[in-house]
Length: 392
Ligand SMILES: Nc1ncnc2c1ncn2[C@@H]1O[C@H](COP(=O)(O)OP(=O)(O)O)[C@@H](O)[C@H]1O
Ligand SMILES: [Mg+2]
Image (cartoon, rainbow, N blue to C red; front, side):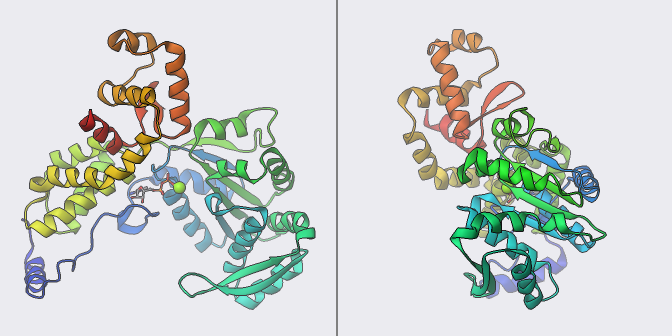
């Protein structure tokens, strides 16, 4: 185990008082990350920042867990610090038009000098709402709106138009995360209403994030759709492998361990270089090392086993929803990988008729279980893939 002198003293005390968790886990996953838990993305940040500053809309898409939200929230923080009014709305949290209005208003008020000012402003510009103060789950004050149901269409229009009224020097920056979720809010009509308001806003930049590629691309690149040509399409790639490897080594060092580059490379490879899974695996290995007093490399396999066991119920749940045919196909993909040449795949494994396979692929892509990468079908979750392999 590698320790500097300073660490030794710390570790000694930790042992003595049995404070095994004195050093925090140097990896973080499951929520958006920043600071030392965030790596790379300099070029992407720059590009997004410049577009936003110039009121150019962006549609940013990538599979889940690549780092869209973390990246955009980081840029938003910078833009806010530079004087841009910012709004961030996660459409996963929006179940109705009223909820949308409330969350939007909350963002607007957050950016104002005082609560009272914010509430006055909301009252002044949005018809049919009455702001009240509520408490969030942590007991902090939070804006709630009583919305007159007869006026909710107006209130919706008014709130959307706040950035459009702005004469400020810095443009508004408005982010709709998980934008594909607007489908559940009234589909085409909602889309049209939204577009009708936003298109007139000269002093605002809109950023749409989404994880379902085909849905988002349909929405923004089909002539008949409301958001056709609304902004530039931007695909967020995985980070460069070298960045990911360096990050892993750096975080282990921050957590008290020097690791070999080979181990970091193996982690990046096994997690398909997807930041979420990389941090998840890192967190497990680090914790195993901490608890056992062994080196990370010595506990690697065991930590991975434990992770797969912990995830087992969840994976079991996914698989139990699939028909035996789907499950079989998925196992084949896990073991052999499926290329773009269906027939070649078929010949090799002599599984099923092409048409039913294609249908199954499409369905499993919809379910987010499979994805197409470089023209090959892959299992989205690398741990699920490993688990499937082990089960077969
Ligand atoms: N730039 C980054 N550096 C380090 N870890 C990241 C980065 N981006 C994402 N992650 C990891 O991936 C997880 C998911 O990130 P998130 O931004 O929520 O992805 P998305 O919005 O694409 O689903 C985070 O909790 C974190 O563990
Ligand atoms: Mg996200």
